[in-house]
Length: 138
Image 1 (cartoon, rainbow, N blue to C red):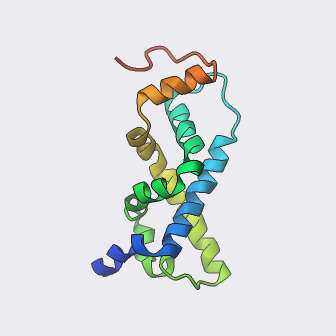
Image 2: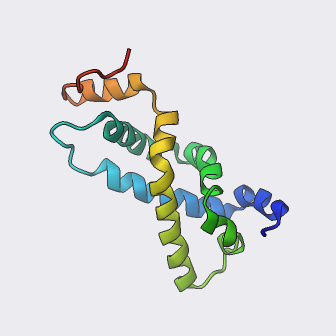
């Protein structure tokens, strides 16, 4: 079992914040540059809005998502590695892969909590894409 006090230090470590920032920016770069589907569903559009906003508000999103990273069992098990700024390159590559997996897992939930329907509707309008029937819900 990991020391709870150690877990409380996770979000305070600059190297952790940097790693999480890199993982979020990597996800954002991928999603924000994907081709827009002919008829994107609202959840795809919601994540696209988040991806487009993340680079200009990175510190805000690092703060807002910190607890999502700590929900992951691998993060908890490897918390000392995440908090170590002097890992070897192989360990860093493994941590980066794990962080991307964590981001891909929580981003759909986070996007729903973070991006309201009105912003998604505005994205459809801004991109001259018809909204799907029944969106936004009334």
